Length: 324
Image (cartoon, rainbow, N blue to C red; front, side, top):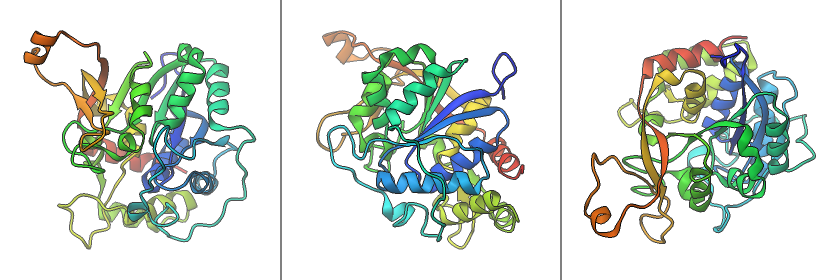
């Protein structure tokens, strides 16, 4: 997909690379309809220095031009960092033995790079956060002028139904709920690609094996990461099938018709206790007793992904990462 002028869509990816963030990067840099202007890094799946290392390695193996990569927040706005090494391995990349990068990160921090690239873009930028939203919140609070050149935020995070970090909270939002609340209320159009669709897009084992056998390092890396990433509980344990996870949010930017969304009120629970980090999505057809007795509260309207065309995104992902 290109924008209305037929030019690639300028995007910036904010990530905590991680296995599926890496899958998202491999897709983004290989799709001709996207112009990846920068990648910013934040603590999440692993510590922020590990995220920078992993991001540089992925871009190198993908054979990309020298896209600037910047180190961002080392911890959430309020709470300590809490990694997901039990999912992504000690190095954040499935411990598959990737080489250290030869590239170096940019000599500016993530917020500075975000501001610079957004304001310098001749066309409004789409932000694609696939991580806790700490960097994005810091950017929006420190440099609110950037909103005039942000087309949309398409973020992987949240859940309408079931969480993974807690029964109701998804990891990226749970990791920094205050940052998510800032992003949701910034007045920028926003799409939530949450767990409800995130978990459904799975690359079949036969395709994963083909990717792993590729002579191209980037394509082969996609296969290795997919084979590490558990798919869904109903996929056989010995299958190499793997979910694309965060990459689905990038697919959504390229092919928005691949998901079904509804514009719904969404807010983030910031209260301590079992609901902290929950994205409360109001799907009621009419106001309830709370609103009748206590009045309506202003809530951000978010394009919430409720369904996804799995086959369409699987074909899109494979066609893109295998294009060398």
